Image (cartoon, rainbow, N blue to C red; front, side, top):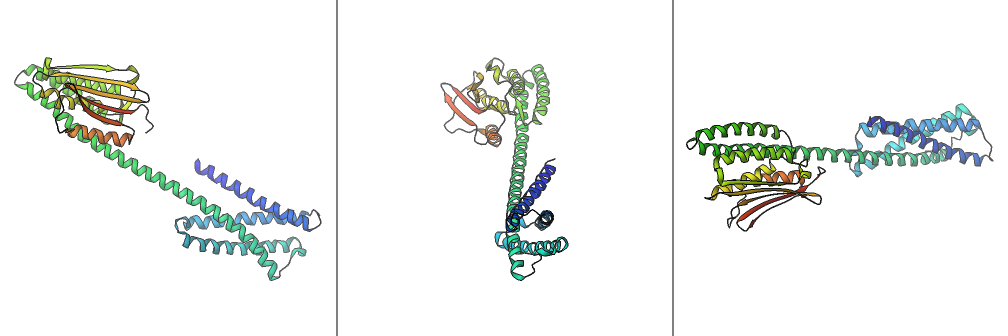
Length: 347
């Protein structure tokens, strides 16, 4: 579709350009013949325009076939001059042949006239070649840009896929740890935990195939995970949700909230004898979606984000480049991990 449109534009420009050149020649001849209109002159100029279209199209064929737009200026300029010179001589000879066929009075085969005619059309072909080569260079540059973008996107997708594949074993390991702790203490709860884990893994497989998921879908996974952890911690774990309904359909990288929650349990709740609480807060802030997970506990002097959060930061950077913020800070007896990301998908 696009190629057909480009071909139509090319032929329109060719026809209009060479007809315009023919009209200019006609005006010049008309004034030099005391404003006398001659049909034979019009016919000759139409034929000259057809010759110009044919020879310039031949130049186009050469430039594209030999891929001159890949050459540097030192290689390209002499070739353009040589080919333009050859087609200019050809144009002049054919034009003179048509003059002989139409009317003899126009035949002036002296060297000076031939050189003047050849030089004038040579300038036209040089101009035509320059414009067309510039177009080819622009097209080639655009194709390379698109190709580089596709390569970059492919590399980014592969890296994201690799990071997500690293995330699943990490998530599974944490979940199995929760169940293992219950096997000897309370087998019935462990059995229930296995059922929850089965449902979690099913949800995880569905989410893993998606690059982005809605916050609503992500929260279904998070809540199932927290229910599994509550079997392990019982009353030592309390979680609270505070989610703006306008945020539910916003798309985010899969396992974003899940990773924050896992980290809050591993580095926060599990280290407290009496347990604690987790608060999940998701709000709109101008054109950003603000996601924060606050858990009971304290930051150590040396903050170690761990595999999960380091992985998450890399995924966010690949998805949003520099259009996101990530922070983790200590409040009074609490730790808050916060992410701010764009509310749209135009990254």
